Each structure stands twice: as C-alpha cells, then as structure tokens.
Picture 1 (spheres, rainbow, N blue to C red):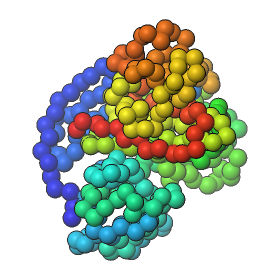
Picture 2: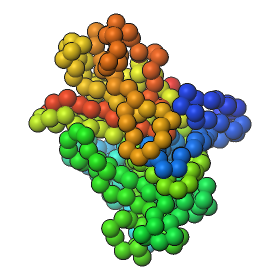
Picture 3: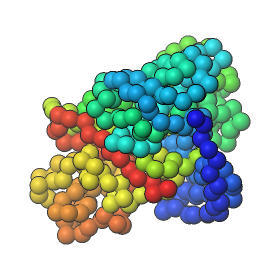
Length: 356
C-alpha cells in the first residue's frame, strides 16, 4: 500500500541559534519539506549531517517478522531486487519503522521479492522488537551524488583540478570503529565529474556512497568557502539510532539528529532512552556529550562544550554543577556532535521524537 496523501500547509522561516535557516514552503503534500542553508568557510572543517530525508517510496505494515526479514500481506507491485543497488538502479534503500518498540530505527535493505524485504539487521534478532502491524516506510539514502550533485559545483563544493590538488574533501568516520578519540578513515573529492576516493584510482566513481542519517562527516574546504543547502522532507514521528559502548574503554559515537532545528539537551531524550548514563557525582563523570565550538575557523575542530548528566539535569564540565543546562544548551541541526560513552558493555537504542 502506497502512502496516502496528507494535506499539510505551512509557511515557516526561522533563524537558528547556530546560524542556519529553515524554510518550509507553503505546500500541499504528503510530507513537510524545507531547507537549511549555511556557510562552510575556507580552510576549515565543517561538521555536516543530513537534516532531512529523501522522499519515501512505500509505506505499509509488517505482516510477518523473521530475524532479518519483513513480510507484507498487501499487493506491493515490487519486483525482485527492486531496492538493491545494481545496473541502472543507483540508490541504496532502507526501512524506517514508524510505530512499535523500534519506531524510528532504520535498517538497510539487502534484498527483496514481491512480498518481503531482506534487511541488514546488524546482528539484531528483529523478532524480539518488531511485531505484526508495525508500520514502516521505504526510502533511499542520501548519497554523495545526491547530497552533493553536479549542479552544486562551485556552490556547495569546489571540484579538484587534479587528484593531487584536491579542493573540497569529505571525510568519514568508521561507524564500526572502536575507541576515543578517533580519526576519520576515508575521504572523497570531486574530480572529472564524479566523487573519487582518496587512495583509489581516480577513474572510479563513488557517487553512490551512502550518507547515514544519524551520523556526521567533515566537509573540508581548502581555498574557497562554499554555501551548503540541504533540502528534503522533515521526518515525522521518531528518528532513532543506537549508542555504542565498549567494555574496555571509552567509545566515541559520531552522532547527529536528522531534524532541521536545534534541539535542547532535554529534548534529545538521551538519558530517558537509556542511551546516556547519568554520572554518580560531579567529579566522577560517566558519559559525555561533546558539542563543537560554533563558528570556528580551521582544521580539526575543537570541542566548545562538554556536558554530562548529574542530579536530574544536564551540567557543563568546567562550570558549577548547580547550573542546569537542560533547556538552554542545544545540539545543532545539520552538523553533528559526539556522544562519548564511558566503559559499557552494551549498545542502547536512542529514540528522538520529532513531535510531528
């Protein structure tokens, strides 16, 4: 069953605390759309994350659940491997759950036939938390080629005249990496009409590399500033992620919220979800939330503030623990932040409710 139309009329223009702008055009559509715009300075690393999603292509309900497969009972019109990248199909698709215990979480589609979806469940047994009747949507990920299309050359990014004279570079952290702090593990640059990977032949296109909705990457401009514009649909309901800990030491999670407005620390619901541990005292700090210093120039951004949760509120490291930052400090949209887990042996779900 395809998504039925929903009339939404909105006219919004907001100036955000971190200098971004959001505008949702007056539209009649099944989804709310908008855009954010911000400057990526020259000679600077700018953390960037997707604030919006690409349009959903199918919405329906689960009828059967296996450890890594959803079945549906309605007529879908799907063809075999329709949601798997290959040939002229250049998108990678994911399932996002819209209801149920796992609402907001997403899983990449590894295969499909006309009535079921094979999912990359990251080792989870989905039968434990997904049930018949839970609703879900199918949508394509943003990729390098769709988030930074050729039409944005010399606007949102600068092409490289050669592989040795790289201009805009996009650098990514390994989501499966371990430890804290960590460095990026792969970088891309735009050369000869396609995105290329540093260290790989410049004849290979990486336009189809996926951008995860709950993580950020670094946009490095060298000689020229650019203006980044993100546009798409605003996720309704929940957007969710997993926060990972390690039993042998601290673990950095390079996090983002796929939402076009800044969110207060209270609104993140990190603690309430169980993904962020409170500190027992203001000197024995457990988990930390690291927010980058805004408007800084230069490579290798420094942290502007470190927050922890103690005695029923969010506190700022280096400040009095009597001051509660729950409603005054924010995490920025379209950028990113770091959740530094203290020693922990589990991975916990984190669900953020958009209120839409």
